[in-house]
Image (tube, rainbow, N blue to C red; front, side, top):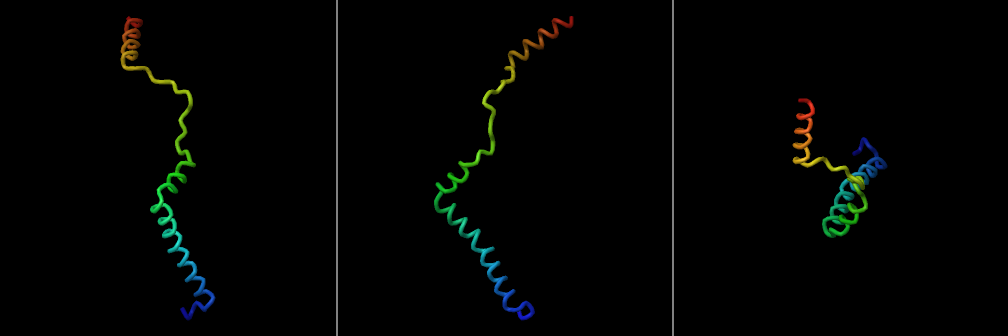
Length: 74
């Protein structure tokens, strides 16, 4: 610490304090009150589904199409 000087030593101590304190405070805020986590996650929609979806054909429809194609080719 003597090679760093007092101003750099205090800065390193402050950085270490922030490095340790921020995760502890965040864990306390989210682990103690799950409503906070639900609020935080609820504001972000990670998956947005389209409003109109074209559904794939059912297996029965696929069989019918395959039979129709087979009939058309012969």
